[in-house]
Length: 336
Image (cartoon, rainbow, N blue to C red; front, side, top):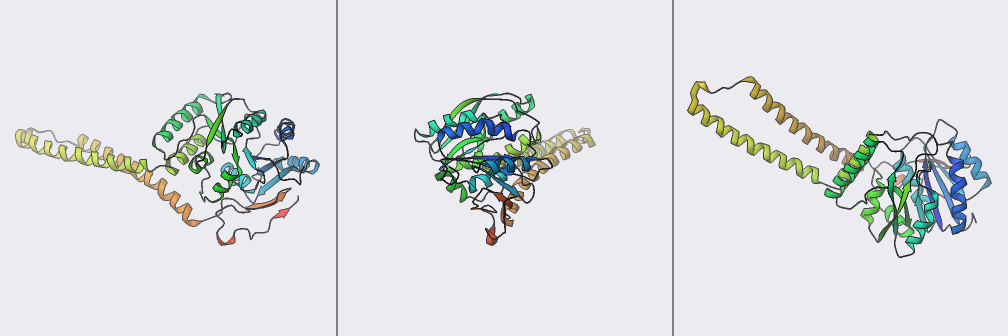
């Protein structure tokens, strides 16, 4: 089965997850065996724990289990894209190893795909194990993104989804440095469906994302990566402030002419105006900085990730689609 072209590839980004690997495989392998030829591709940011050793032990007894280890920690979005671009299956499922997303949902995604969908997204009916702050940030983030972005991202979804080989090859042609998968998949398009499921709490340990900053970073990727509305908004704020200032100048001149020396001109008024205008300017500069920073990252054309070594994996993209002239030239160790 390991030598056959997989029907389904399961991509699993991991970092400091040694206690979740075996429970994940115990539930996932039986599910995939019922569907047909499969591969499970772990994409590992170098961990200080025994995550790599546990995966290699499992891969030694099951050649359907593969491992990519990166040269340093590139982050979950890059690790996820590495798995997608190097998987061999006709279909690809992205799922976390912590069992918050039940592997038993994979057959439901596959059955839905048979109805003619190129992408089937798993939509959460509940968000068990998440803090109130994260739920509020997520709700606001999805609403804002879908209000201003060029593409629509389904609410209450993550990276857990099924994609066809056609979609994978389209993703290969993109060179986004941030790897915001749910936005990129929406951008690619094609017919997309969804399956509703109940999300569970983590099997073991704690998540590696900052509970607040992590959600904000994801939201910023969706806003600044798929919309120019913030730039337009700051432009209109500037026009509004300029118009109000012009009106205020006229009012001040009229009051000065009418009241003469009795008109109260004082430091508090000037201070408030300076703080207000300064705040608007700093906000505008911050918005510009977000876009300029992303332009800078794209222009540098640095690889999205660098694979250090691989086990039971045939590499197609050792550096990702941003490898420049050196793409595919780097030596990658195979085996432990």
